[in-house]
Amino acid sequence: MRILLISPEVVPFAKTGGLADVAGALPKALKAIGHDVRVFMPRYKKVNCRMKKINSLKVKLGGFTENVNICEGRIPDTDIPVYFVDHQKYFGSREELYQVKGIDYPDNLERFSLFCQAAPLFLKAINWKPDIVHCNDWQSALVIAHLKVTYKNDPFFNRTGTVYSIHNMGYLGMFDKEDIYLTGFDWQIFKQDYLEFWDNLALTKGGIAFADVINTVSETYAREIQTPENGYGLDGMLRSRSRDIYGIINGIDYDIWNPATDKNIPRRYSTATLSLKVENKIQLQHKNSLPQKVETPVIGMISRLADQKGFDILAGVIEPLLHEHCQFVVLGTGEPKYHRLFQELKQKYPNHIGINLSFDAIFAELIYSGADMFLMPSRYEPCGLGQMISFKYGTIPIVRKTGGLADTVHNYDSKTGEGEGFVFEEYSSKALLGAINHAIETFHKKSIWKSLQEKVMQLDYSWDASAKKYVSLYMKALEKVGIKPL
Image 1 (cartoon, rainbow, N blue to C red):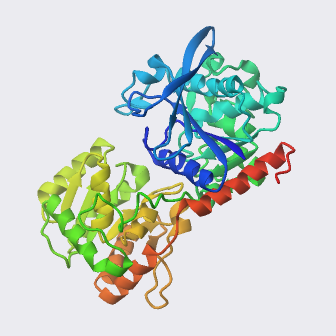
Image 2 (image 1 turned 135 degrees about the horizontal axis):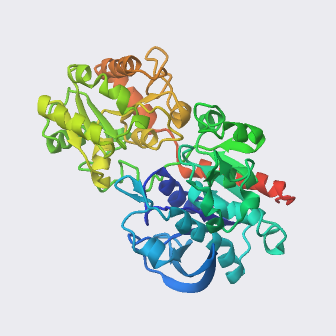
Image 3 (image 1 turned 30 degrees about the vertical axis):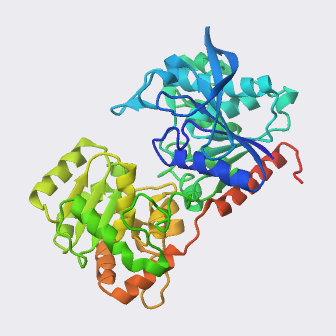
């Protein structure tokens, strides 16, 4: 099967969130099971990759035309082609991907419309007909709209199925309706069933309206986005397409996330040498200027500091939590109010909290390997990778029952041995504190805790299983365009 995966971010070239991890790992897993997979993404300033120019295109944006180069590189250590859309003004001159200091680039519609319109032009230019075009989030949704409208009668694409993946329903790609011509369309597509949303443009609707198959990154989230609470105004549209919506949990790249082979942690370990994990804990405590006490439970958190991630309910119990003879280590950046909160707490409880208001990939690995527990109290969480990574490192997750967290973590019962972590359901500070206290109580029962660690370290969330589910999804898309896959 010939598959083009289109994404605005791909590991290791550019990343703001979990989408980049998916777009970097899924192609490798698909290639491993025999498919011809290629990747299409912007060439941002931060992209560091050996590449060569292979094509030039002219892309119309409203009343003007932009010259675009396409460069070809490879995903590292593979022969998987990555096609980079090279445009200095829109991508090559920007320090960040979508925004600076929380403010979106004002020309994002132009930028990603150019990106989307370049894709089918490029495919025709190199005469490579994909069986599947797999688009991700609002930045690439217009590709699907153009394939189904602009190229509707073009025989080049008449056997191409389309898949649209929603990684976070909270980002709709909203723009002023007066800029409709920048999309490559006219007012014919400004309708409630297409791109119109409360008298604005919502690019995500292009993917939802026109894709042969829609998927999200967990089965629970696939149901949640069809509700008013999590559908962001598009729940009715999604319910009308419920037969075409699927959920597939993201996988973990165990070539990267594996404590037995991880070169970035102080001490490697496995289930057979689990006692060595404590050496990482000591280093984590040391680097956060915390007392190096093995018997003190350490709760780690790696997250964007925002209400959606549960920091509002955490703020309500953080001080009582720090009285529970535990230590708390946080890594991340986000809303200024939470920066201030943690800075004040560090002054007040220097022996109980470590704050790292930045993002450091190497330090994140130390948290996964050194913490005893990993906290994810999210209001909503489409999939979540942190809980699956923490499993592999024998770090027990504490999560709210939502989205992918609900699909992967079930509440631990020491009597039956069932469950993989500590789960609360009500979105409240009280429920969160209850789950944390349950985890701390279990931590002090050493034999039970070790058994739980060994259990979660053996769970398999590799991309192998997820890739096979995506192939099944691609086959459903092909069936929708009248192709019977072999």
